[in-house]
Image (cartoon, rainbow, N blue to C red; front, side, top):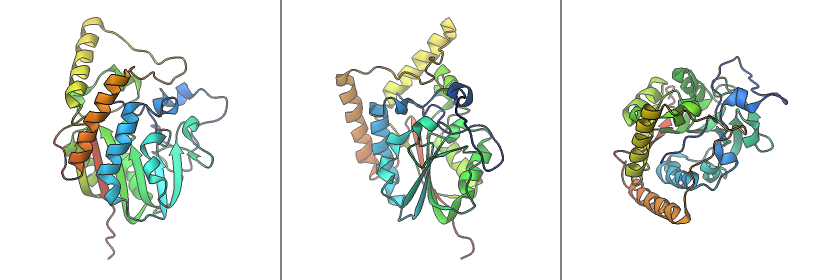
Length: 274
């Protein structure tokens, strides 16, 4: 039961610097559905993802002086990074920005080359088109020897109207994610699936949704608030899902996982001048 990040990063181009929003404009017009984490930051999937991201990627963080958090409206996933250096949040949706955050586009980052030692973009690049442009921007603002941390949703066969509503352009396999990151000039240090333990539930839910959509041509609409309601989960089911995710955490400490509903990547920008 993978929950996308609801178009948390800008998916329209422009020249730097880029201001994505002006007061009085409709957020639904500019960004599609807003991040559900704005209203439900304690939803089980966000809590589990933050835990899995930290377990899989924290050893690649190092000791950065400057950290860029792209898509910071999805705040629950990056809380573990906020003690690392100077933290700069950026998002297309100002509702997800704290004081001092930057409202802007992931395809036109308003920062000089080599500004950040660490860039995190969790469930961001699948919202951006062209893909090569957003990866080029994330790489551009990385300092030599800087690190890029990513997560993306897995498997095109799992595509449903949920992806359409939330502004996705693609879903990934691990191989495709690695290929794309390498094409941007980065070295991949780790690539693994996540949410492996809940994958049978995720797969069954997505296949059921695809069959229903095909048979009924059911069209889901973005609510007037432009923030999607997350599936209701009972306390007992939540405990089961979080418990299964703990198994992923234990496994990720020692090995990469062979399948799952998300792909996690740690990559580095090697200083070729050395």
